Image (cartoon, rainbow over all chains, first blue to last red; front, side, top):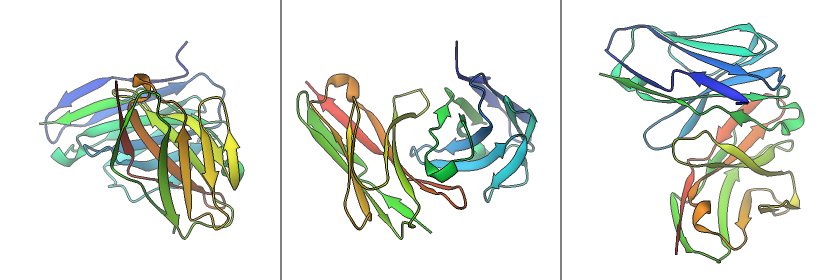
Length: 116
Length: 110
């Protein structure tokens, strides 16, 4: 069974469109994250939710809106897609909110977004 | 705010020991240092974590000097399957701020 799953795996779309990426974890974790990995492999955190509450909200355009319907799901909706949004988006989860900085994160396989 | 710096790439040969160093200036007292491994087309996965001195597990060792301004991931006797990108991650425990290094691409040659 996949611990952290994301759909879709690939997403090709036109500029200006709105799209969503879904993430689910079956680990029973309380905390979930969204990361963006650019073409230079740089990983940057975007959002984090703990028990459905937003706890990390980095400097991200407000076109990006995360939604957590329950602890096991964290979706990412992107409005008015731009060329610069092309990247790989990773979802991750951890048992808790990095209590003492010791929480291990479990990453999904990534969603490869290409905006044309 | 902690910032991490790693070499962009490293080459090695099978059977060698590989050491990858990450510099994390201004690391806070309570920061832990974690290393992740990422294979192509996969998400990163946890390798090892430490706070100070030395930590060893079944796949790697992590050396952290007393000043904690750097850490070194040591991979003993690498194989071709260790070819991957390695990231250090500094966690600011009181804020949850996550700072990833830019990643080191390790290429293991036969």
